Image (cartoon, rainbow, N blue to C red; front, side, top):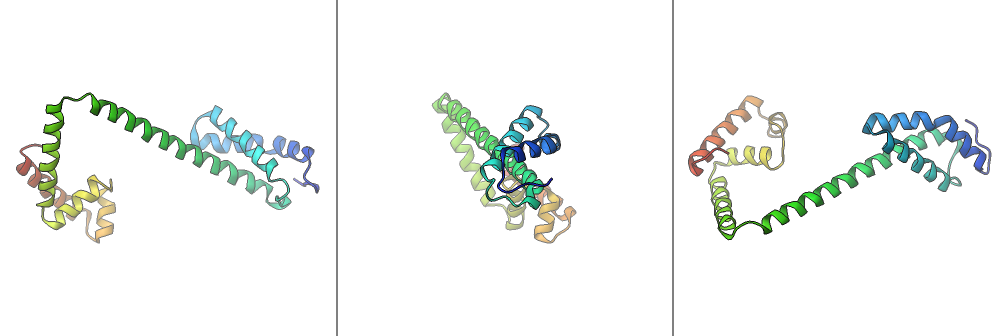
Length: 171
């Protein structure tokens, strides 16, 4: 599409008519929500209009897709923050409703668990924390430690066995 200088409303209309469907499809395939896709396409064109003086005619198409992708990523990041906040609010509410006995038992168990983890052999503790705290898969741990996946599986099995005997329960 050829854009005249200066960027005019007619240019935005032409851009909109030419790229609306494809940018909406691009966003929709990434998020699966047609309403969100349409909202983000609208925001994309608003941003293009606001940046009209900085736009190079040869980069309009890639700029549209870049802005759309960034808006979608910002939306997902915002949703993640909202979700974390809601989860934290629910957890703090439920913690406040717990009995003092439960809170004390929970604190004792946490202390016992931390002691049991600290007492693990270093190779076992390392694999356990990478898997349970960092949420790494065995293959990722194996790659990081330059070991085979089978070696990681054996270490994790040994770790869980040690913790089970130390705590007297399954982990």
